[in-house]
Amino acid sequence: MTETTRDLVLRRKLDAGAPDPALAVAGLPPVAKALGLAMARVSDKLMELVAAAESTGQSTRSLAELLDELPANGLYAVLEGPQEAQGVMVLDNALMGALIEQQTAGALAPGAPTARKPTRTDAALCADWIDTVLRALAETYAEAAQASWLSGFGFSCHLPDARPLGLMLEDEPYHVLDFALDLGEGARKGSGKLILPALGRAPEGRPAASGEAGAEPHPDDRAAWERRLEGQVMDAEVTLLAVLHRFRRSIGEVQEFAEGDVIALPEGVINALRLETGDGTAVAAGRLGQTAGARAVRLRDADDLSEPEDEMGAAMAALDDPEDDLPAMPEAEELPDLPDLPGAEDAEERVDPLAGLEDLPDIPELDGDFGGLGEEDLPELPELGEGGLPELPDLPDLEGLTGT
Image (cartoon, rainbow, N blue to C red; front, side, top):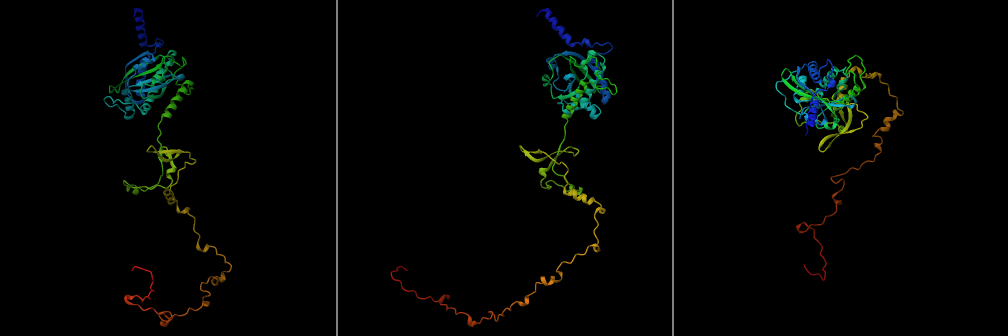
């Protein structure tokens, strides 16, 4: 390697680590320093967290170089900017945990939190802080045309790790702003990176945020905001309840429930299942079934999603009605007279069940125990021989028969 080649390599490394000379705007701090100040102000104003920048730095890296320098774990927040530009803000577990802990508990516990994989909820809790820091940084250089690459960026979504960034980001130079923060007056130490395309896509000289009341947002900002809003809404979790049937029971009945009790459901509820949101709004209808051994709901078209009224509910509603609403029963004297039916005067003669019995013939009387039959009228019975059997007649001899 010649001396000239080595000098070129060293000069390129020094230039990559030095701030962009185009950002040396008179009277304005370096971008890395302004980032630390913006984080301190936003942390105090947004969540009353005391934060101070311990160190900041700025460099320019290629896509391959910055991917090699990313931390192994942390929150990877994808940023959307003007003209579909994309950037990344990386928060290590300590900084992410501090932001979440301050919002949920109101103070930081001593000691570093346990490293874990960030979730969608973690990203949602940190999104406001990220957006506010980016707006505050862009406002600092609102009048600097050379700093247009800072304008118009905001939180879009988060990634579970850094692997997809190689496919998502354009292969171009990037400004990398490193920062390390002291949080909660020494209670926690956190760090991260802000990565934005070096070739700004926002119109030069356009203020990043005018702050004027009623000012019309720039079309690029509006499009970026709409993409972020859509990403947040589509990624939001919605809890749905599968409701088979609703009925009412008294407190005493509920207290008597025991393990193994069976609650009978009306017929047909399996085919009348409803999917409802947490506030009871019905969004779909379906049928209860199973798939692969697990309970499942097969959705179907529903023409009517109105709440069906159960028998118990109807009975309770009837009891709640005042008696004044019931129709008055007519008095007995007010009932109308029934009209006379034709032929009613001879109805008894026509329906008398005993009429004509006097014309029946007499039944002969039965004398004695045999109904008028004397003993002399009985036929003679044969006399019985020995053994109680009657004497049998002699059989004729049959010739030619042998045997006994």
